[in-house]
Length: 80
Figure 1 (cartoon, rainbow, N blue to C red):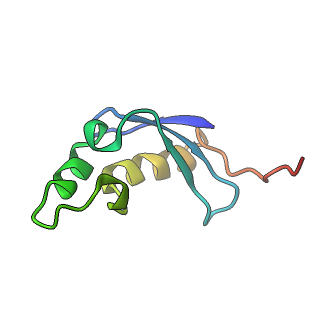
Figure 2: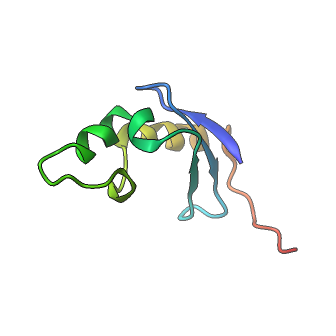
């Protein structure tokens, strides 16, 4: 997995891409504590659990940028 850092909050996640449509993200810290945008959505009126907040646009932009610049490669998944 490749580390990717959010340009907005500095949170780091680990990512893998096996196709243009596939993205796997592994958080390295508690999601709501690490990402202020997800924390704000989770603390909203609906009280959505952080695990159910679908996305952080700033993190998505950082991941897309990592793919565009070649820091995060789209690779084929190897079967054992």
